[in-house]
Image (cartoon, rainbow over all chains, first blue to last red; front, side, top):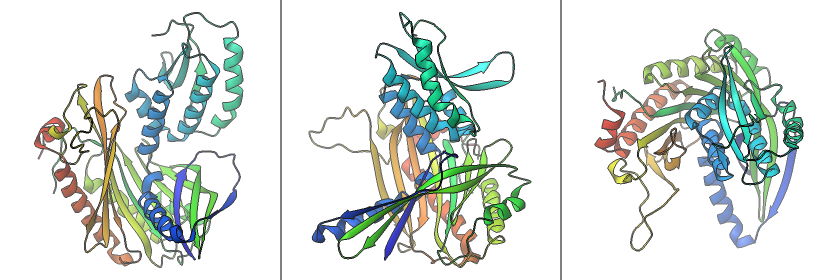
Length: 167
Length: 248
């Protein structure tokens, strides 16, 4: 039996070990070629998840495509290089937030620096021209989904609003 | 010694070792490695990794097995360098600022020796050295040919106004014992109004077990020499000036 492995870095400490088996039946004369192509592609991708750069780049590109505004990408990237284990939570929370608000709502991913103490963390600011009455309820709903995921991570992240006008 | 740039584009360098399936492996090994590396990499963390295995079951089936495994990660105090230990995997990652090959190689040797002294390694299934470069050019309208000798080519009547791309190739080396996967793609600029690109060079051992354990570090040195040559061949003098300003 031939086998090839590749790896994808996740950051879900709470998740138990799982095994999912999936059988794929292929047309006999195509099976061999498809397998060989898959094997080469996977082999060449082996390193892909040992690095953190590709996942950060993919994540930020995806967020921009989904309409998340990132006014200072360099700051956000540097934070994610420092705390790569929060990237998946940030991405999921940003997309969930995008889905909860109308397109005219600006979602801005920024690095917040506390002026009082030496602390910084990523923040997704929700900004509207006219604020919805229930905005804090929606934020709390989103936060309930993701706050537990952040407990064991090295970095920090917040979804909030500063009630500012979209920039 | 290769060229040094005042503003090197390297954002991440990785050296990885996958040991052969017949090598001894158990869950105590990351702890043994940590004990040997704790002075340089004192901060340990744990991640869950999704591993996908494809098994061919002749004649007509291909089975995908997805499982989650734990990976131990040991960070240096500044978190710019870290060692990952997974299932039969050792990797050493160096984030920017990348200072020199000699410094990175010292860390590779240190981690590899700690790994070898923590388990019985029968052979190396795969070794890889990878450099990911982030090149950021000021300005929205730039000509790729001014900066890269390795780039997408759209001939004939194809539209030239691409907004995103990814191009890659595999270059054989040492009679195809090794391969270099070369990839360039557009990337997220650090500053609005700039253009940026990822130039990713991944040199790896294509023939499992072809390098004896005692020659592994020589292979890594050769890999670095070859990667450096390919990198220099990928870029133009204009980009070299951009990185400026060679120190030596």
